[in-house]
Length: 214
Image (tube, rainbow, N blue to C red; front, side, top):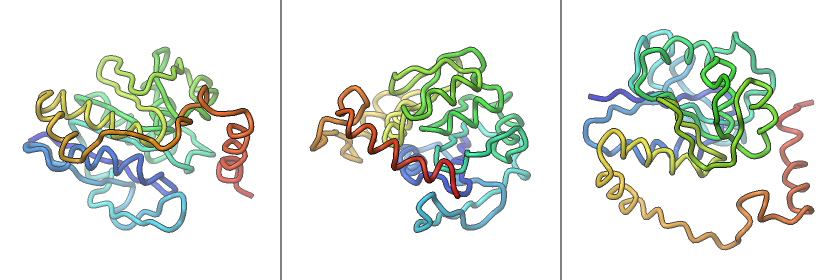
């Protein structure tokens, strides 16, 4: 059985972790669980969605796969952060260490992305670079046993990438069909290069209060 830990922490972004969860959870042979610093409820960045962690970091010595989501809980990220410490503990023996969106900042803080290409949400490229990685706008990046995915919705792509590696490309195609992942967005503005300067500035301003709470 392949063990997969989906990390939760206060102010995580829900789709970052639910996307990979949905891609992985029904695949035979995969044991998928939500994990956190403590067992129990963990609330997302909106304060309106709570998920339950079934296992705590201290009780886990090994995972085959760890998935770290982004969110707004990284404003004061440092080496003492429980998620960073957990990554340092399990990364040496994982088959895959992965992140979605700004979850890459936790991997970088743990030293996993030193000097390698990685991706994150476009608004956090500078922060990722400051932590030693080489940011790229590629949606899913694989370097060795590390996979990083771009912002939020890219977690589904990353989850399917994992399914293909763990259970084969046909299983990944089956999961994609089962969840009807066939993107046809109503607007073509899902990347900075496709957005107007005004829209870009609006989104940046939306992020500021959450990145720098009063």
